[in-house]
Image 1 (spheres, one colour):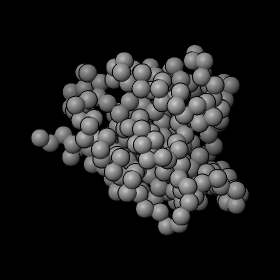
Image 2: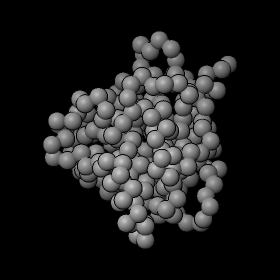
Image 3: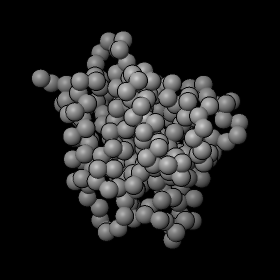
Length: 221
């Protein structure tokens, strides 16, 4: 396991999420919570390209512009919330850093397991960037889903769906105004709990969906 210290929390069911948000309405530390979901860098053996490594500069610019142009109904500080997978997640954290927006890293798995599942397949440079991101944010801004019995959930089919709900819960706790920014090709994902699921469930919890960053537009020409 990694020696990175982190706060571990157990995700709640959707009804409990709403109750928690309502009871904490007067004690939110930020005015806005900006969630992010998006595709990882393609594995080398992916047959149909979705986010090939060569498209990173285009995607980086689009995410940076979308974060910079985000409109809110009231003034106040913003916090960004995302995982830290290769591709969209890390580009979002890096864009927020460029714009002076603090972010929190929310991982569905313990650090080393998360690297194996969602970072290392993109190559060693992404692992380096992941560790640099964790170091820059510090342990106070890293949270890992689950309790002390976390290992019993590592291989469940629906862990990524649960992670999406947990991230929504965190946004509800942190700010009265929330939005979701998504980097998406508009296609059903490779498995449960991907970008499609996040976009579909977010509105049910009062999360505004920002204009989508259309992944397919970066693959043309």
